[in-house]
Each structure stands twice: as C-alpha cells, then as structure tokens.
Length: 467
Image 1: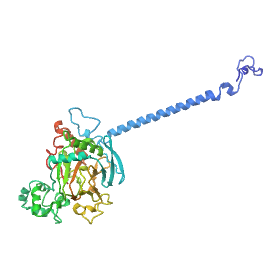
Image 2: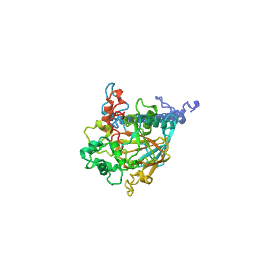
Image 3: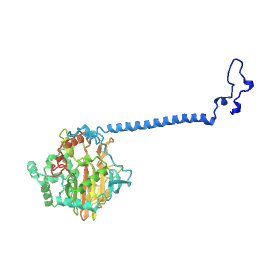
Image 4: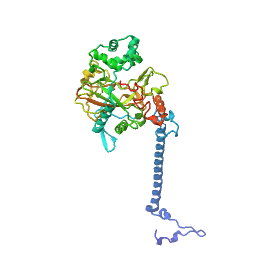
C-alpha cells in the first residue's frame, strides 16, 4: 500500500461519536509481503525443528556409546586373564576375579582355503598369511623369520645341546622290570599291540585309559636309554620308532637372546592373544631330524575330560586328577631350513567331510603313507604355519579338541630338517586358568621369569610332554 492510499475515503467515514479505523483487505491489514516476514517465520520454525532433531541424534549416539562401554566392561567376567585396564593395588596380588574380566580368545578367521590376508607383525613390513585348511583352522606365513633369525635359533639350540626326543618312556625301567618281573622284550611286545615291530601313539595310550598291566605311573618309570638299547639289540631301526629326532628347549623370557624375545612378540601379534597367556606358555622347542627322521601323526593336545588336568595348570587344580595332558591351544611351527628331500608336515585328514572318511589306510604311519595325507606343507626356511588344536566354545574360550588337527612329520629322505615349535597353553577350564595366573602373579618378581612355570631347566621333567 502506497502513501497516497493512507487517507480514508469519504464513504468510509465512521458514524458520529465513534473513532474507528477504516477496514482494509487482509493483506493490507497485515501490512507485509508474503516473501518477507511470513517466509522468515517459516524458516525459523523449520530450523528450530532441525536443530532439535540434530541434538536428539547426538544424544542418542552418546547414549549408545556409553551403554556399549558398560557392556564391554562387564563382558567376560567368567573368563580368566585379568582386567588389562584396571590394575591391582600396589603390593597386592590380583584376585581371581580380577583375572576373570575382559579376556576373550580372538580367533583368526580363515574365510576359505586359499584366502590371503595381510598381517602386520614387525615394524615396516607386511606379511601375507594364507589359509591352508578350515578343518583344522590352519595358516601359512612365508618369511615369518629372517635367514639370520633362523641361523641364530639353530646355533642357540646347538650351544645348549639337543637330547633324544622322548619315545613315550622315561626313567627307572630297571626298577619297574624288577617289580613286575618283566623283561624289556616283554614290555615291548606288550605295547606293540598289532605286532608290527613299531610303537605307535594309540598303542602307548591304551595303558593310559583302559585297565592293562602297565599303569600310567609305572609306564613313566621306564628308561628311555635302556629301552632304545634293547630295541637296537633286537634289530629295530630308529626309523621304526614313533619319533626319531633330537630336541631342546629355549627360554624366551627376560634375559633371553633378543631374537628369541622378538619371536615371542611376533607370535603374540600373529595369534592376537593376550601377552600374559603367551608369556606363561611353554618355551620354544627346537627339533632336528636327521636323514630318515620322522614323526608319526599325532595331536599336540589331548581331549580334556573332567578327570583330566592340563599339565601347565596342574598346580591350580583343586583336586588330584589321574590323567594329565598338554593343553596346547595353538601350535606355531617354524621351518628353520629348507629340506633337500622329504620332511613335509602332513595333515592326513585336513578338510575331510568326516574324520573317518579314509579308513582303509593307516594314516598315522607317516613313514609309509605320508603321500596319502590330504595336505602336506613343504619345509621352507623362514616359513611359519600355525593352527588351532581346539575349537571355540562359542563364548570366547577353549572348546573341544579339533580332531582334524592330526599331523605328523614325513620322512626326511635327504639332508637335515630343523624346526621350532611355539605352543600356547590355555586350560579349557577358565577358572583353573585364572587360579594358575593368580598363583604365578604371587611369585616374587625375580622369580617370575625364572621360576617353576617359565624356565624349562628348573621345571619337573614331565612338564613338557611330547604327544
């Protein structure tokens, strides 16, 4: 409306005695343009609602984040290993409950056979890890060790000295022979169930789990040297034994050679497990196979039943158990040299549809039937293979034994084979594992790395079992 229209017309004059403004059209009464004040009001309303919406979204995200943190803090209270974020008070050893928070055993995913994934194990280098099988979950990592590291490990093993690998027999055979009035020949014939002239793993285990003449305790009293002398006298070749090799143990804790400590750190990164579990596992085992050397197919760990205790946590067992086994959750095998002929690591039933799919061949006999195994890994210097000996229980802890993890060493047909084994010991009974870690934490600091658990030279001779 212009200034000229502001004066009232004569026809619009108010009646006498009243002073009222003349009526105007609605838009004129508002005295606005639709594109100015009206549109700005609409914009303000829209922006208010928009900001309220954004604030609600942000508040919701904060709530979800906070709630997730609370759930993560409370998750795994029934699993051992300790709270890595909350430390016990100085001078007070952590309680069992403090060892039972926040530990979940991360398992590397295999995806599919042949799948390659990148892993960062050392600064400035990326390794490729290839899936070899899903049953068992098995991986191969080329160049895991450098040539110099392989040489150092072999030199350290030679410096310490290698001993004969145990043939499932140990000390005191003379006393047992007197007590039972058995000759070495009778002992051998007793163990050799199928009378094929060689001792196999399942034949030795018979006396452990069924009623027979030799109990497990009595069997452990047998002398390895005396028994092998008897075998040589009888014309039995070393290649006919279950295992034909020499080995030693290399400590990897504080004060150990830097290469050995680096390998342990690398294994921790590879397996993605809490460092404490790796630290409290067995030392590095170094094994040398001469020409003709082999190792029949076997499992690194046995099934764990209520009456069976894990060797590494037996001190934490509440009750005495009649049987023990090495609870090796993971095996990491390193090839320290490239073998000129033979010496492959065989997995006879890897990725079978069923475990008993092949039953017409003695697949345990890697001396004769190694070529019939489903999977064989050729020894290549610096390469590492690792696999899980147990399944997951579905709750982030150790489950049942993976029977497909059966493996053995094929005969070395030419040259010498050097390997090293790093076993990570975890008790399927998580409460027992927690008690064990609590006991270790109570040791004085100067004994923590050289005491009963970590130093193989001080441990009792049966702490490391060759299954």
